[in-house]
Length: 524
Image (spheres, rainbow, N blue to C red):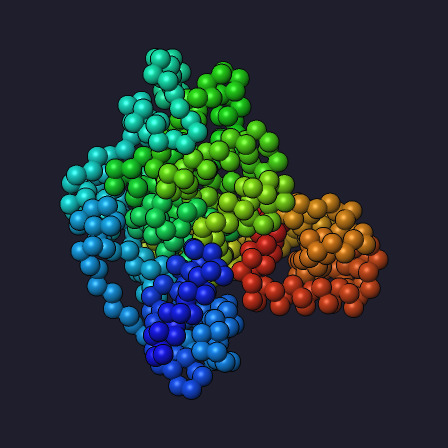
């Protein structure tokens, strides 16, 4: 067997051991390159995917290759560009003869996408045109309204699994839907500025961006559901709206809703006895976008309704995109059947922006405001305290307002003057140990008493060690004091817990996200 045959046989084994989303994301486009004795070299189309395969899937690939050749093998992932020429049959299989072939997500992530900012102008009043929709498709598509017309709902109702409306109830349904469509409560409009072009891409959000662009261009075909998670103000909502704009421009029906609004609407529908209209509105769409989905956890009626809505859309190959401040496994009050479904597709995290990305975000915001900021002003604004995009925007708005009201030039001296009260407040406000314990307990769904207790249950023990880490990093408490706050534990236990969490943060994206979310909540 040559290298290509060995790797193809190994891929068959790998595919049975990982989820479809993981296999498609990281192994699609890889090719067996060379087999020398027991060493198999595998070509990977992007540097990002190559590093990820080495770090997370090296052992899995090595075992699979060893099973194929019948002896212990070694795997080497190497970077090599792999040309992909879309065939006519591949284009036709995507639903339109002129539609582009989908590039694997890992290959998309290999090339850096330069941020583009759409500057406001008096003449720029056109409808949003997505960058990758072919001209032919755009000419034949019709814009989707913000709510679904009744006629479109009727066409899709027959395809809605487990949900049928008899013809005799159409008039009653139309009557029930009319006030809902006319009310602001049911519009779920998309933010006009939250487009893919306005999204600044960096190492902290590259996976989430590439995945969002993939599902927007081929809804229901790749990562379904797409689950985006990260701390407050990192761009999750921006990506949801960008997907919605892209899909609507291609003629698809889109529903965007926050988990809180979804909950309120199902309660109102039950009260008004309009649950049929409610279900039809959410189950007859092509793309469902749900923001802050963690808030449905523990709400029995909402979870039940969302479970059936999720199943109906997924079985019909309709795209579902969810955002949350934590991974599904950390939603402790969420029913297992929903938690498992949230993990079916691709889970993509968004980390706080690094220094370079903060600079790019500020440049983009300034360009949108028609401002030219000196370099020293950008450097000052991109200080480490601004760990999320909202904090950056707030600092920029404050500085601009000071310059306009005082009629002074926008320089480093003015920036220091404008931000001094914020920095003093940030420096003067110490974080109490009780705040840390409450934030950790709330995030992991355990009690503060459990953190202080002697339980060795895995979930409680891990939450307790995270509390040790955050207390050590965010408070001036000594090791002895931290031990007292956690039930009288000695300093060596605190050192061990701090080291374990620190090591997990360096290797595991979920651990990084958990700690970043907790630390962010303490600074709000």
